[in-house]
Length: 147
Image (cartoon, rainbow, N blue to C red):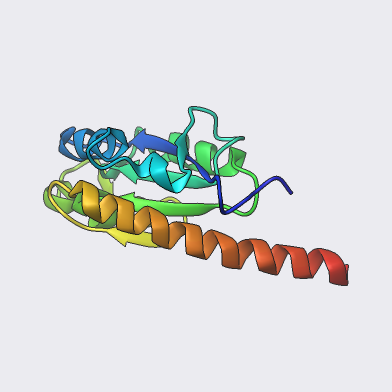
């Protein structure tokens, strides 16, 4: 098991947002907010990621992509839904092609609402995700000892 709470990696996927939340996610990684000061690194490879950060609503075109990214991630893993669209479908929830929030496709551990979600909220959600990741890692380790 390669996970360390001192250096969690996250992967970001834009489901179908207006790009407002994506800009805020990028802003949280820039020097002003600097999520990397907590040792969190952005990666493009799901097999290296511990945290799945998703923005935008889930629709019929992206539901399989979201599931595929999630399935490629190794355990333990945590999902953070960023923005009201990723949480519930937002203003698009009644659109003909929108299924709903990220939890309609994969299990979500942390919800970070907002339209657009603020960088401070994203950072708080990611730090909460790290706590949950630590708990999941402890459970996995205990299960491995008992096996």
